[in-house]
Length: 110
View 1: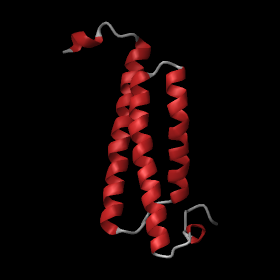
View 2: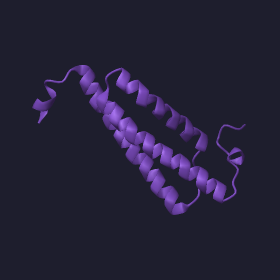
View 3: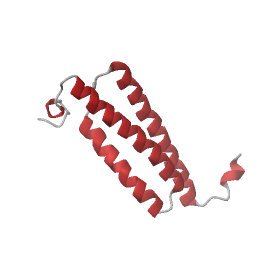
């Protein structure tokens, strides 16, 4: 099994590992979407934090190809889709419950 890795360069191995983390992160984010769909309300999460992470993901769609990180790019595509879905659902359910996003305690307010 390890023979398939012996011809990879260190940057390719790093790309494969990072792409794996991106993919596993998207699975975790999709689980958050599942919970949000079940509960139909945002609890214990900051929409602002997720919007930042989602924006970072969109940047990665530009960044990874520019440095030749193919697996990371594919993982980032799935991550952006999952995070975007969560953000859309969070905004939808917040509006439906008439919760103003700026009234939510996001943990940043002192």
